[in-house]
Length: 212
Image 1 (cartoon, one colour):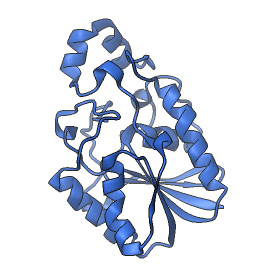
Image 2 (cartoon, helix red, strand yellow):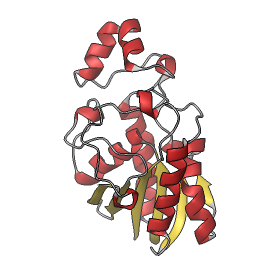
Image 3 (cartoon, rainbow, N blue to C red):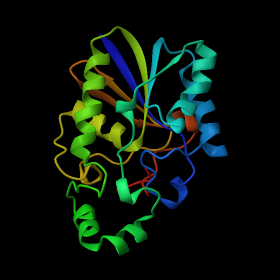
């Protein structure tokens, strides 16, 4: 059975303004590239056997330094993409609140809203959890490159926590950029939001709904 190291991508353009990136293609920032290099340095001695990632650029780019050092290819899987934000894509919270005031109030209140033209968190869970289930039945240590939303969904699933509403109103905090969350067969959550390789502690100031 495999162990999964679930990695949120490094800092991407738009993260600093809490923009709802979703499934749009944005590159890593200079800091994000540094985070990816630090991640590779952290994991180079680990018995990693496989790299699987969301097919969005920022997730792939985060694993590229590690892939180069381990001489492993990155296997893209679109099921690991961030939530589809639909009409909210590219907007900051104040813009969403102005355009969809009632829906935004529901969202910040903890409801799993159906984003206009997009997805619910339940939709994300329906596609990312099967990926984890499949990978856990394999062997070795698998690095799973994904995003803040899917990573948190997988952490809650592994911890046996209910995620029926807005996942960022649940019992787990938001994931930092380039963090590592460890899931063992069971599933069992054995590590959460580890950013020791970045020389910092998890950021307690992160909003409940970080940039995705």
